[in-house]
Image (cartoon, rainbow, N blue to C red):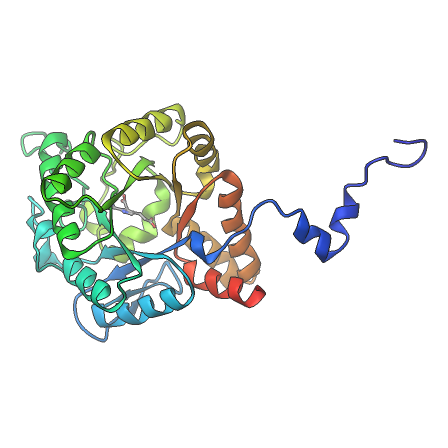
Length: 336
Ligand code: PBG
C-alpha cells in the first residue's frame, strides 16, 4: 500500500479486452487437438453412446465425413478406437494384427482420402481379447495375471499391421514393460522409420475410463476385473517420470499422461522436468462428467469445455486428445 492506495492494481490489466488479450499467457488452438473416434463395422452406421452424449460409433464411410470436418477445422489428427464384435474376440487376440481388420481398413480409407490428416491407432489387445484385458493372460494363473513378454510379441505384430496400413502414429496404451523398444525394433526391421510412437507412458488405473469401455463394448468382457497389475496407481507421480524416462530411452516420440484433468500435476512434471512432447488425454469419464452437468443446465457448454482445455495448456501439454476436439475447434474459429 502506498498510503491509502494499493501500489499495484492487478485489476488494471484486466479492465479491458485489449489488455487481457495482451497479457494472456496460454492459448488453445485447433493445432493442439486430437479427436478420438470409435469405429465399427458396417456402412451408414452412426450409433450414439449413452454415457457420452455427442459421441458416436461410426462405420468407415461415416468416419470419412468426420475426417473431412476435422481437416477443415484445422484439427491435425484423429485417434481411432475399434468396436469389435464377439467374432473378433479370442484368447490370443489374433484379430488385432489381421491386415484385413477394421483398423487397417479404416486407416487405408483415411489416408487415401485425406493424406495430410494424421492418423493415430491404439495399440493394446483389449478390443480383441475375450477377457477384456490389454494383454494375454496366463491360463495357469487363477487370478488371470496379464503376461508381459508374451504380450509384447502380440503388440509388435499389431503395431506393424497398423503401420503397414499407413498409420502415421501408433499409440501403445497397454502399459506392458518394454513395449516401446519391442515395437520400435519391429518397425525399424520393416524399414518403417517414419512411424511415430505416441507412448501412453503414464496411464493410470482409473475409474474415468468407464464410458469408453461401454463405447467399445469391453466393459462386459472385463466384468469385475481391473487393470491394476499394469496401469499405474493414481497415488503416484515419481513413478510416472520413471515410465516416461524409460519410454524416451526406448525410442518413443510423444508421451501421454492419462487421464487428464485429475492429473495436471503429472503433466506439469513430465513437461517441465523431462522437456519432451507431452500429451494429455481428457478421457471418457471427464467428458461424461462435463456433459452430465451441461445437460442439467448446471454448466455452460462452451465456457466449461474451453476452460477445461486451456487448463491442459497451462499445465504444459503440447496436445490434448479430447472428445470435444471438433466443438472446441469450431468455437475457436468463431472467436477468431
Ligand atoms: C484401451 C484404452 C482405454 C482407453 C483408451 N485406450 C481403456 C482402458 O485402458 O481400459 C480409455 C479412453 C477413455 O476413457 O476415453 N487400452
